[in-house]
Image (cartoon, rainbow, N blue to C red; front, side, top):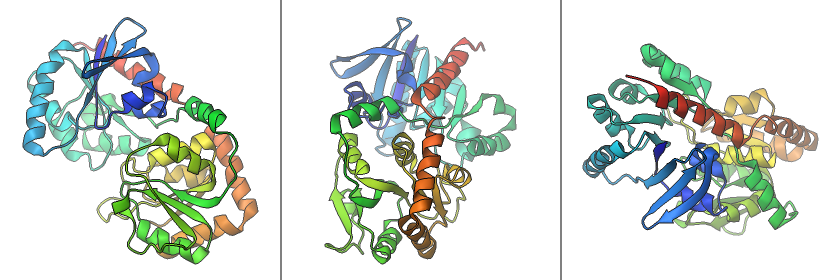
Length: 351
C-alpha cells in the first residue's frame, strides 16, 4: 500500500525522533515500523511492505494553493490513497477528484461550517472530531452519511510516560497553565487570573502577549516562538490545572477542534481542565466532572470557575480522580486502529 499524508506542519520529523507525541500524525503511524529521510522526502515504511510519504502543505494564497494542489493531483497517480489529515488540500483536490479519481482520498474535516466542503468535494471518507460534528455533516449530506465517521483524538500515553521517566518528579509551582495559541481568549483570562491571585503561567509567542499583561504580577509569561512539546511538558508537570479559554464566535455555537492538543495533555497527564463551552470536548468535561466549563467570552463566568478550582481542594481532588478514570478509556492505539480500519475499507472500495 502506498499512501501520501499531507499535513501543514512537519510532525513526522519530531514524532520519528521521539520529540513529539504521535497523535500529531493522526493515527497513520500505527502501522509504520521505521522512518527514513530520503533527501527532501520523508518516508515511513509499513508492516505490509508499503510506505507512507509525508508532504508539507502550508497555505500561500488561493492561486498558489490551487496550482500546488494540481501538482499533488498529478502526483497522486503514484499512490493508493491520499490522507489529508488537516483538511488543507481537500477543498481543491476533492473537486479534481470528482472529475477523475486516480486514488482514494481520506480527509479529517476539522472546522465547521461544513457546507461548502461537503457540497463541492467527494472524499472516500470524511472523519470528524466528535459525534456532534458527524451529525452536522449527516444533516448537510444525508446521502453520504455512510462515508462520515466520528473519531475522537487520543493521546500517545507512551510518549508522555517515557518523558516523565526522563524528567522525573516536578514540584507544583503553578495553579493554572495555558499553553495554547489558536483562537485563545487571553485578554479575559489575564483579568480573571489577576483577580484570583493564584500563581499561573501563560506560554506563547512574544507578539501574542496580551496587552493587559503586567510584568511581575502572579501570572508568568513564557516566550516560546517555535513549537516544542518537550519544553511545554516541563511546565505542564509544574502545574495543577490546564486552562483552555477559546474566544467566542457569534456565528458558531461549536468551534472546530481548537484546544484539542491541550486536552490531550490533560488526559495523558490526568490533569483537571477549565474550558469554554464552545469547544468540542466541553460536554465531556462537564458530564464526566473533569473540571469546569465556563461561558465563552464571559469574564465573570471564567473568574468563578478559576475561584472554585483554586479554593476548593476537595473539588480539585475529585476532578483529578475523575480525569484519572476518564484517561483509562483513551490511548493512541485505539485511534490508530480506527484510522487504519477506515483506510483499509476505502482501499477495498470499488467504483
